[in-house]
Length: 378
Image 1: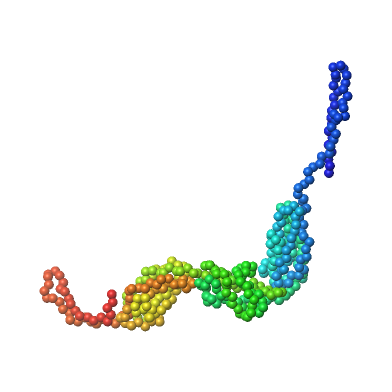
Image 2: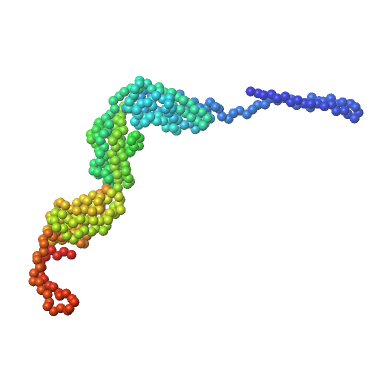
C-alpha cells in the first residue's frame, strides 16, 4: 500500500524597507510525494509439501518401499522431517524394523508385523525455522504371512565363545532356498554385516571382514521379492579374545601323598588375566605329562587331583601348571623342578641300638641305630 504524506509550508510576508511586500514564487513550495516501504525479504508461507503419490498399501511383513516425502521452501530454509505420533494411527501397528523417517531426506522405512484395522493414517511433519506443515497419508493395510523367523544362529568355527577366530563361521536355520539372508549386528536388523542367497537349510556364512577383540551380537533376517521374516529374536553372542594370558605364579605343594590316586594339594597365585583357567599335568620328569595331562582346575587357585592317576610308590612326580585365557590361548607353563612322592609304607623298627659308654658328665651319650625306609623324602 502506498502512503502519502503532506508537508505544510508556512509562508511569511516580510516587509521591505520601502514598505512593499514580496509575493512568493510557486517554486518555493515543496510538492508532496508518496512513501513506498521496502518489500519483505522472507515470505511467511514459503513451505509446502511436494505433490507425490505414496504407495497405497502396507503389507504386513513387507518393508515399506523406502518412499521419499519431500517439501520445498521458497525461502531456501533447511527442512526437517518427522512423524506426528499423536495424530498417526499407523504407529499403533507393530513394526520391526521400526517405522521411521529420515529427518534430512524424508525417506520413510519400516516393516509392519501386525494390524487391527483395514486402513491407517500416517501424519508427517515438515519444519523450518519459521513454519510447520503437516501431510496425512492414508494406507490400506493387508495381511501376508511372514517368512519363518531364522531362529537358530550358531557358531561352527570356532565351536564356542570366547574364541580367537577373527572371521567366524556362523550357521543359520531355518532357511528357504532362494531367499536373501542377511546377517546384522543390531536387534532392529538395520546394520548389515554379511548377505547371501540361501541354497540349503541350514547354511553357513563366514565373515569377510575380520573382527577386532570385543563382544558381538549377530541377528538375521530373510527376505524375498515380496516378503520378509522378522529380525531374529535370539541372537548369537560371540566374544573375540586374541590377547595372550599372563601365567600363574608360585606353585607350591607338599612333598608326599599317602594315596596312590590322590595328589597333595596344589596351590598357586592367580594370573592377572581375567577369567583365566588353570590345568594340572603330572610327569615322571620335569615338564612331562605321562602321568596326568591337562586336568582342569577351573578358575580356582588350589586343586587336589582325586582321580585319573595311579602313582607308583617312591617314584617322583613333577607337577606342571598351565594357564589359559577364556578363549583358549595358553600362557607359559610353570614346570616345577620339585617333585612329590607316593609313600604309604611305614618304616621298619630301628635295630642295633648302641651308644658309647664313655661320655662327658652333663651331656647325653650319642645313640646309634639301624632302620630301613621304603622312600627317602626330603
